[in-house]
Image 1 (cartoon, helix red, strand yellow):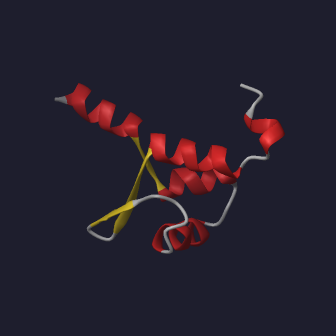
Image 2: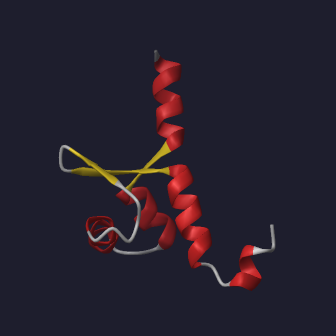
Length: 70
C-alpha cells in the first residue's frame, strides 16, 4: 500500500507546492483555484491539482517561443 500512496503523491500537487514552484503567495494560488484559473478539485476544504493538469496549464501560460524549446 505504501507504493500506491507514493504514486498518488507523484500524480497530485498541493497549492503549497505550486506556490513554492511559482514563487507566489499561497493565498494567490488558492484564489486561482477557487476562481477556476488553475484546474483543481476541492476535497474537504483542500485543493488538489493533478500534476498533468498543472503541467498543461503552465505550458499554456508560457510564451510560444519558450514552449517550443522542449
